[in-house]
Length: 211
Image 1 (cartoon, rainbow, N blue to C red):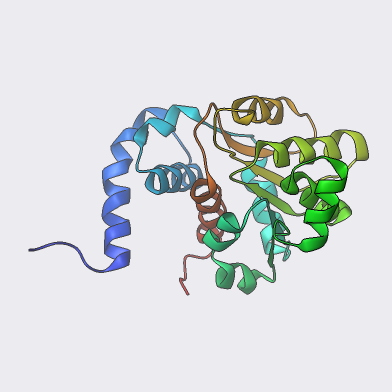
Image 2 (cartoon, rainbow, N blue to C red):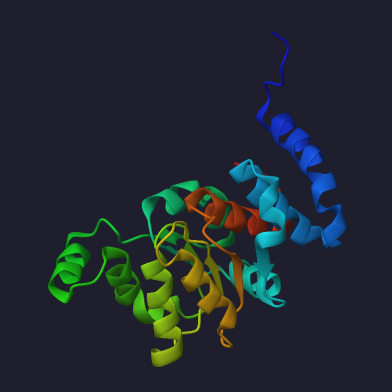
């Protein structure tokens, strides 16, 4: 069988095939990269009209990345999907507390989800960071509560939880928030690979050297 075997060639060919589906949206170069990586990660061109980028999201996120900001995630799948060596080249790290025993105990005692407890535990560390949520709507709700009630100010929220309970509503609330730039996908679509793909797209736009 004859097929493409080199990872970078597979990726480049995928982007070529995605490109015609993005032509109607008149995107900037970096927006095209973000849209393309979302669609590539999902294998679904129907994502295109559902993607929403706050006007300041890219600039705010990339400024934070250049400054060595950390990324705080809701689940290990998001953390795993982010290119940590690339992030380290900017001086940042990825953090996830979903499996931390203290967080689990706090969540049980408080009657909340572990992802909520993890975001609450991060607290002021979220200021100036990038928050990447790909699984739990409750995590996104908690981050928005921290923003609205406790004045936390992440540089950007990549909020793309997936599912049928709370996902669409939490992302709609994210789009209504007047405080923090965001990147999201409306409706029930989303997931950890999608959130990670957005973060990677932001980094590769700054420096496409791969590790």
